[in-house]
Image (cartoon, rainbow, N blue to C red):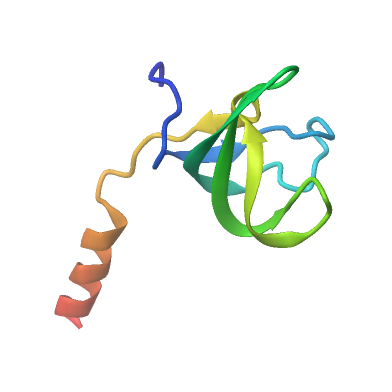
Length: 91
């Protein structure tokens, strides 16, 4: 995966503000919008996922991550929307 991270990508959180021991490490997220550039951490992305913990300790479905804290996941062979339609029509 040499292509840079962009909006819509699926990623695994590999680090955070607390390093590799952060509460979001190992969670999968979908990259949303670019929030800006941080002087120390570089590019910051707003990501969406389940059970995310923000830098303020709040639980929710979105949080901001430095690009270096994310590992891009390979795209699924079949998009989730297609899988869902197959389930409904085969039922």
